[in-house]
Amino acid sequence: MKTFSYVNATNEKEAVAALSPSTRDGHGDALAAARSGHQPSKVPIAGGMDLLGLMKDYIVSPDRVVSIKGLDQTIASGDGGLRIGAAVKIADLAEHAAARKMYPALVTAAEGVGTPQIRNMGTVGGNIMQRPRCWYFRNEEFNCLKKGGSRCFAVDGENQFHAIFGDGPCHIVHPSSLAVPVIAYGGRFRVAGPNGAREIDAGEFFQMPNANLYGENVLQPNEIVTHVILPAPGQRSASYEVRFKQSHDWPLAAASVNLVMSGSTVKSARIVMGAVAPIPWRVQAAERMLAGKTITEGVATDVANAAVAGARPMTGNQYKIQIARTAVKRAVLAAGRA
Image (cartoon, rainbow, N blue to C red):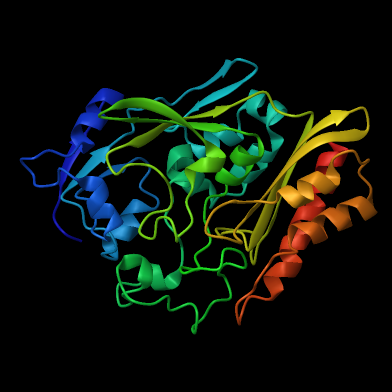
């Protein structure tokens, strides 16, 4: 990989300062550079589960790497919910008693991330900010659309793991397991940058390729995610993932369901699918179908059918419609039993 300098930031203020652009280094307009396909010159690193691979494959070649392990590593209660530091290890989230009780869909997703070694090193913020796993994007030999090229090679190539929603022009699927339940719970992300801190609704954080081809979210290049803020959850929730293999694999399709109940009747629902679109894919038509119903096998089937009604598979991933339908159905049924 290319030679780079390393800054070990001990707190949020130092991390923001080390990542901020300056006129002296010629990167004063970092956002414009990112939008035009140029690589950022300064990048944060936490567990390094994703970034090191990107750097070794020359997908990202920064001049400066800034350690953000000094960010908040706590999980704290507040306003009926939880405030999770972005530097919290995924393993610690999976083992947190309050998180397990209040947000079982999130803990289930955390338990399925990678391997024990990866969960012990990887962080909550790193999983949420993970770059696409598309093999064309990850291969330095392919100058794909997302890297400034003229085409998405998945259109006419091997696309069995690509999107069935979104209509391109880039057909990646979002790789984060944790982002799906965070959106289902109505969570927010706190981000910090040189202009201060702000909070962003998790459902508005991620961006489609037609809005941001060279990135996946609204984060400015010199901003970092510092916390995941979860409101009080619904009474019942669950996640379900379908994988090719159970160890060290990304889901082929996933779903998280969060229900507000009135007795045995669903008062309102939030349903989000993962690994089927360039962003975590919320299906509001399916949510409306579930509202006012008692959860039964038949209702769950109808809701699952509604969730995949707009799918447009590629040449090699028609099977994803069925497994996405299954993920939604089983997540709804699991939430109903919670």
